[in-house]
Length: 387
Ligand code: FNR
Image 1 (tube, rainbow, N blue to C red):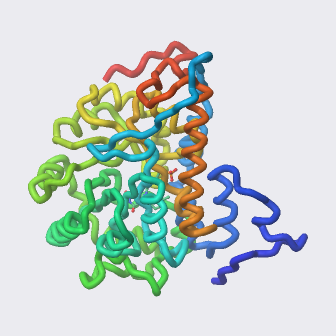
Image 2: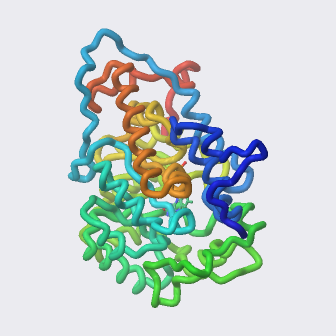
Image 3: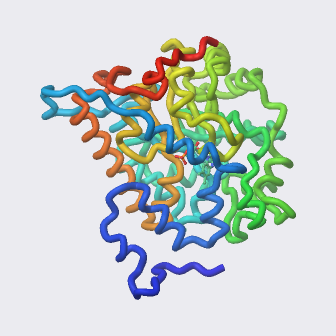
């Protein structure tokens, strides 16, 4: 597998020269595709099975339109917010995505530094190629830790302790992955973590490597190590071993939102895992309002999935999200430009979001209301499902 930094096109121009200045976060994907080995690019980009939900995560945003208000003084706009009591510069945060050193040698360090420079939160994956301690050593910053629950609960306890000691402020418990979704590109590529990398949080526990298999190596790893019995009682168990607040990541129905509230979760992340788990679930932006309604304002609701524009952030907030997380834009920008790329992604989204607020007639996040948008459901006069 070769890695070409500046692949020349037939016309003799590099891809980046042809594209000129990068003006939106989606442009990093094509550059990443040029630069990365196919196995790595496919792992980052893929969704499950038919990738219906993958496309829908974007499409559904495009079906929501604005009802902007005019002649409002928008000379000063405040997009700062508070997440679980932590003040951040904008309601745009970084979702956990695994194995970032496959994209760039600096991997999670670069992401941590970029998030910190932008004044926002990075969520570190359990399956990071840098450990909680290493990421903490990059400097100050508000960071959350994403948890996969292993069959061996001692491993989980140790890891949670280490995250606490390293100064992580919350646990994002991923609840949509009792088994890995069927990502066909990874199966065809026999995806495995490259041998020069390890899942650093598990180094020394014999769980840091991924064996080659007749399948996606990650799917086999999950089948061997991840606890399929995970249930709501384990949220209580997790609370018994840590005082960190727990965000339940992967709720997309009202029923589960109510259970999350009852379980004592500190918040919900409406997520379909970037469309990498169950295909044919709705786009997260389509499921958001049902979850927000069910949570009844008792705990904050966040969203990830398909957020690529400042307008998307505004739409999510108008539907009741307290903030959003981005996944793939980070790994694609890392592949293209390392830390500078991630900084640029955060800057572009910030600027687009601020502009959307100005053109929508909002000067603070509290000004963003449901009546600033209309959805397909609104147009069809469709009531929210009564659940
Ligand atoms: C992910 N995601 C993920 N989620 C999680 O809880 N733990 C993990 O280790 C990972 N790893 C991971 C790797 C890659 C390459 C991707 C693309 C995604 C899911 C992630 O946190 C988030 O839910 C989605 O990425 C959000 O969708 P977008 O922004 O990628 O469309």
